[in-house]
Amino acid sequence: MTEPPPDTDHRPTESEAYRQMYRITASYDRSFETKVSELLRLGCAFLDVSAGFLTEVTDETQYIVRAYGEHPLLQTGEACPLERSYCRKTITMEETNTVQHAQIEGWEDDAAYEVFGLESYIGARVVVDGELYGTFCFADTTPRGDPFTMAEETFVELMSKSVSYELFTKQATQQLEKQRDQLEEYASVVSHDLRNPLTVAHSYLDLAEQTGDTGQFQRVRDALERMDALIEDLLVATRESDSATETDTIHIHALATDCWDLVPTEAGTVIVETDAAIVGDKRRVQQLFSNLFRNAVEHGRPEVTVRVGTLADQLGFFIEDDGRGIPPEQRPQIFEDCFSTSEEGTGLGLTIVQQVVEAHNWEITVTESDAGGARFEITGVEPAAE
Image 1 (tube, rainbow, N blue to C red):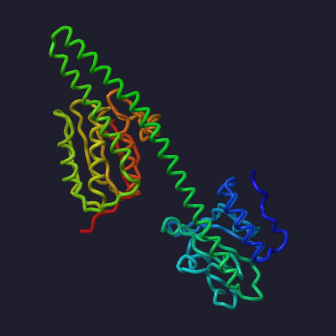
Image 2: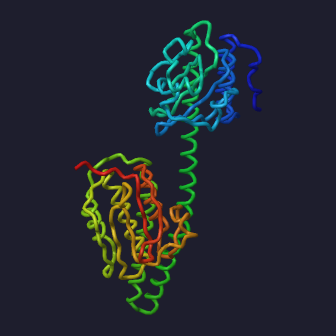
């Protein structure tokens, strides 16, 4: 049974505040959002301030994830440049950052003071799995008569650590759920797609045995190769981590040429139009090129031509072909696990491509090439130093 929210109609004593904080964070029934809202409400009551807010700091911007109070600029969903926030100083400090009276403490000409008008402030960093997430803060538009006490600073710091733990738990749970869903998809592939080539192989073996036609053995080999490709893709998709652990200087021309040499095609052609070098995990970028090349061969015509080059107006590169292309209505689905438009495809090749892109914090889009085939554009790529 979910416990009622803490009683914050009166200012709690230190011992009451700690007890209420424990009840909030120890509750398994409350959602992350509910816990944060109740912690902010409790903190405002204990510190006797009017506003509390959890921020996320990304790309030099402060986003308010959750807020309590009526300050119009300190509401859930609001954002501002980090340089105009009080939190820009908080994220550089190991301990809490406090302001008793901003106007007489050197903030009167500060952009943050001009925007928010906060006279008193206390905040602490929120760190998740060793990485800065944002801040957990409390503030008021009126100054304090006395500085924040050591007990109040400790209380805010403990709250920030509690929120850090809750965020870590939430992210870990989401990751486990994602992995569980992927494993369910992969199990479906194993039970269904491996059964099909197995059935085919058994059928042609029986036919060869009954007729003595050794020509059926090639069809058995084809079925076994289909199984081998599926197993290889499954192993790659399930074993790779979510981040690129190695960084190398990768020369696109050399890597693309090497990867093409391993593609099973005799009539296809690759044209590499760049000598550019990028930074990435070479082994995993090889997976990206190999799978996009194989995708072009499997879904195109026997004499398919694949072009590789760099993007003129962005940091990135493209791989395109002159095959049948990908219909616009299918493009949002192609990176989903086990999705394939070909009976011969495993449905995991483009999933692996997406994993490599995400591991490098790149982005990938699919469009149509000038020749009517598929064009994959990878952006956000770091060029190698000359």
